[in-house]
Length: 128
Image (tube, rainbow, N blue to C red; front, side, top):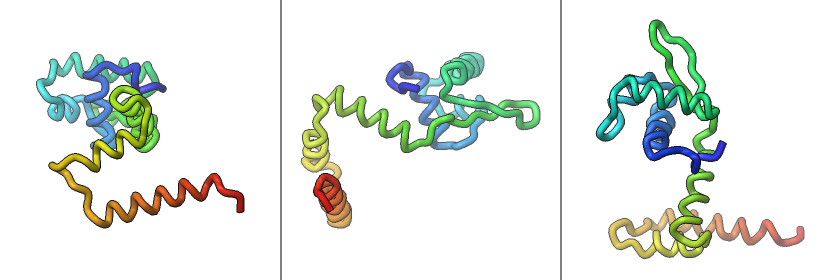
């Protein structure tokens, strides 16, 4: 299930689903920017279900939808796309761009966590 095969609107719907967990067509319709008709949202959600990204169950007279992917796995796929598209596949360039952003300077705790993650990554390749 490659998220890069999704249209812009399908990605927006999936964002709403990940945020809400279990959502109805009306929940999604109300959350979309410049939403199409409810019928169009229903059709897009059925397409996402056909593609294997969503599953549904009945709740009263309506269907509620959930993602078939865990949010973390979908996030990894999206992050790989961002790396490839904007940073030539370079994690270093992506991190450098984030750290250089004057509008969102990282807090000391975040920098400490990043340093710890880098150290863990270094140690993975070393023999025990």
